Image (cartoon, rainbow, N blue to C red; front, side, top):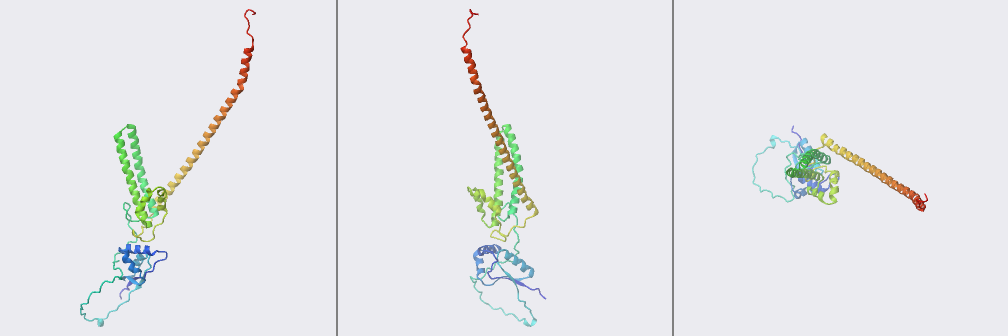
Length: 318
C-alpha cells in the first residue's frame, strides 16, 4: 500500500493580526519572486501551492508558509489505484500548447527547504538580529575596543612625555582608524537590527540628525522585531546562553554608572556644603575683627587727647 500524499492549498486567508501587505512581502521573499506575481494568489480562489507531499514534508511547508502570515492548509491528495485492465496503449496526439494565462498562479518552485532561521552575519549588511543579540554584540565590541584604547592611551602618554612629534602623529592615525572601525562595525549591527524590525538600514543615518540622534538608538533597542520572515529574510535564530549573559552585562554596567553618578553627585553636594560653611565662617570672623577694631579706637583716641592736654614741664622749674 502506497503512502498517502498531501497538497498545500491557499485561498487568500491571513492569520489574525497580519497585514496583507506584510504577508505579500513575506511570501514574495519566501518564493524569491516579485510582489506583483504574488498578488495573484490573493484573489479569493483556492490555489494549490504544492502537490505530492508526504505528511512530514507537508507539515514543513505549511510551517514555512505560516511564518509569512498566510493561513494555508493541508489537504489529502486523492488516491489513485491502477489495475492492469485499465492500461491501454497510448497514441500520441499533437495538441497545441495552451497559452499562458495572465491570471495563473506563480509557478516558482518551493522544492528546496526554506530555512527556519537566518544565518548570523556579524560583518554584513544582510541578515537580522534581535534586541538581545544586538546588545550582546555591542557589548563584545566594547569589551574588545576598550583594552585597545587603553594600550593606545598608555603609548600616547609615553610619547607626550618623550616629546616625540612623529610618534604623536602615528598614534593619532592609529586612533582615527580604530574609531572608524568601531563606527563601521556598530553601523553593521544597527542595520541588521533595523532589518529585524522591518525598516530600511538607511535609517541608521538618523543618528547624525540633531535631537533625533539622541533617542534613536534607544528606539532600536526597544522596538520588537517581526515574528516571522520579512523582506529581509527569515527571523534570527533563538538567543543562546552566551547572548543572554552578555546582554545582562549591560544591566551591570548601567547599574555601576548609576551608582557612580549618585556617589559623584553626593560628593559634589558635600564639597559645596563644606565650602559654603568655610566662606560663612570667614565672613563672620571678618565682621568680628572689624568690631574689635572699632571698639578699641575711641580708647586710643582718648589717651592721645589726654597726653596732648598735659602742659609741658619746664626744666628750670624742675
